[in-house]
Length: 305
Image (cartoon, rainbow, N blue to C red; front, side, top):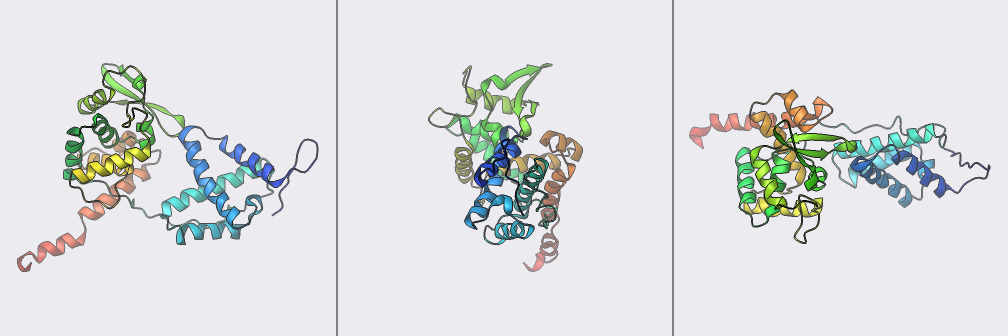
């Protein structure tokens, strides 16, 4: 498709200048972590176009279809990841149409991968979660207990937990609360149960400023260091999981609340899911394993096994 590379003087601008302006216009719609994630996903598409020696603003529907196929076959990404990255490309193209950089969007009719109703991520079981909490509480690193508590008992996303500062601690109506900056820069007040408050106080260690979670150098803990700490804690707790990562604790937060009898609506509010179907995906994955026919067959044949 032809691009309308224009400037106020009527002189045609180079393609890379137009592309840079288009990307800036698209990212300008977002802020905070949402902007960073959108930029990261869009960069995947732009790099693929560069490797194909293709101008991203000249891409046709078939080209975007090929990019999706590459993500699925060569990248081996989960359908939810592919769908999210395709959504970023779709919105980017629509913004280009709004800004009259493209005459029409080539991504509108690209086939989306089917995202399963169940979440592919599995949370920890109740006993595993207890073992992880105990290991973190007994750890010599004062940040470990707070990290596990913030992710698993408050359900924070990893960027939310790592971005917390001591100034985010406060009180509201007799409750200790934590001011959390979530997706899209939204700020919410999350109450601190006593166990989580103790973990946070231990990590803060009477400091009046700076990040709540710190690394061994005393600097702000990032998601990569947090993932390494969780892997070490899981190994110390005897939890055998091929790929331990921070989101697994957020998943555990949801499934453990459901196991405790909390209503799906209340869990959705606690997890700050905009769509209840997101919470239901976690619930389906949990129930599918709990009620798997394999357990029924094994119990039926127990006398012979």
